[in-house]
Length: 462
Ligand SMILES: [Zn+2]
Image (cartoon, rainbow, N blue to C red; front, side):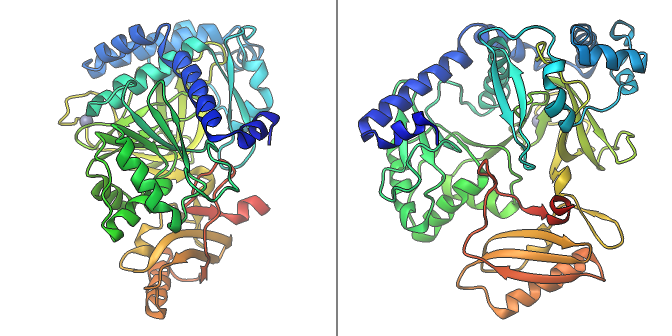
């Protein structure tokens, strides 16, 4: 714990709220002042573009980011070796002469990728991912304002909210000392209208408090990890407790199961709008009114590649490789974000936007498990189908032929349910595997508080 955290923990409640408000105001200024309004207007303007217009824009942006990247020792060498000249780029696919940029390379050579000396307004963001090796991502204030222009125009505006909406946030900030077991489990930023809820106190005995505060605060917009608000939603439905009706709930970072989505949407009486992005800020996706996750082609150039490096066809699983247009200080060109997705076969959406659709975010590359025959498996939803009495489940591969299903059981979980679960797993994986069910009181989160549905323990021990 840092000295500042210790000071915060020891301070009286009122002072903690003052500190939260001060923090919130600084965040607000960094995000929504300066070029933010003008950028948001431009982003909204481009929204009605045709596919051809977007491609022409991508070519121009790729040339520009390539030219800027030449000012960094890392890319200068890279371009020379590949014989790549950004000015000669005629179509986005011409970029494929360049090698992929791995997350390890960003960790080791992030400094060499800088195109200029970082100025005073540059913030470094740590992207730890699930592997726990932090990478420093340099972002200028201008760039941050551009990113939040996309959030405003291409996510919140799509369901009638904006950066000014009253927000309830269920994030990783430790707003309430973790050891304190008494309410309030939230703190307010009184100036910009945000209530930060602690995700570290979501025990059943505390949930009534959460529901009451949510009802009182009446957020217009909620930002949350699905695994954090799911218990609140489940509790409210089970106990008949009423919850507020925000305009929308935006979820990020974790894949959302069908059961989580149903429960959360029912309890809050509004839709979930999934947002797709990362601290690296080279891809931005958001859900439209039709429920489709659109990728903004003017935010970055997205490639979805198969294991052999060839582009995946729509409907096929592939790895996300992206080139961001916004970061001129530390360009990320053909960066392996680490996600596996499936692009939709749909060529257009009823909402009228000409932006590619991600059909499914399948998981993380490191979460991709393989059967004894070597077939990739990433989603295990079918294994849990028709099995009752499970609050949370996680699939762990411990050896080539050994799978553990870790579950948090409800009282309704019987031996029959367990047998069904094992049978489902056998059907899903095919013959030749040992499957064990492990009952636990809770499933540990990652260092950054995220829930993982699939864990490859072979990879971490290798
Ligand atoms: Zn749409």
